[in-house]
Image (tube, rainbow, N blue to C red):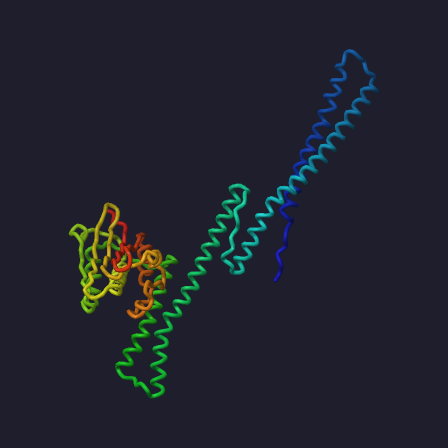
Length: 373
């Protein structure tokens, strides 16, 4: 690999720039003195009335003036160059130190150490902004790397169960212990469907986070969204004996929003399924809507298990589970709420979760921009 040619260092460039400036100033002063100085000096000599110097005296005085001026200019230039060298060395030492620190931190980040940070230095606002920006970048990379590792680990866990189930059934069939009866085939189809659903969910979240999610927004009434979501989940609620209520005023039912009704329907279904998974028979789940002059709010409130305070900031993260064993038992992939956040964000809305703690139920609130009149 061909190495990139490196130019002169920062100190050399600063010193060269100062010397060039000094040389230009010296040449300018010398030219001015050479052209104008002797003329002014000669005129002053002629205006002296108390003496009448001979031409030889005037010539000698002018030569002495030129010599003194040249010597003075040379000494001044040498002093300026020496001062420039000292100032350059001081500045370079002050500048190179934080730059070297940043370079070392950049090298660590390039090598995969995203915990590297640059300490604050007193070098002015520009350096402070640069180092703050670097630290923010490193922190973001560190978070991204942690998320990536956790996602890979969680994804492996998610795939392990259905793959192991399919492999176990196939091995049993191969050994003659199990047979390809209807029950076995149904089980195999359920596990492959789970893998397919997991792949589709991950693809959807990734597309939304990369702003590649395909949306087909159209004017829709809130009431239609609520009715559709209720209809899609009513059977599952009845089977578990959890009470599902729809609470929306007539005004809210008729309020219009410009959304992709299919995607928002998926959001509401995911929220209702999430509530169903975290409630017991006899509990209640309420789907309600309200509106203001600028937005429409849809809430899914339940009287179920509730969420501890430390879990609330993470419930919308991919594969995050409050109760891992219970969620896996219900077949949840841990990605449903991540899909909710991704779709709502793509619509320019917000979603948040609230709970007073374990056993106090939970409320998930979706807020969407209201359709312009």
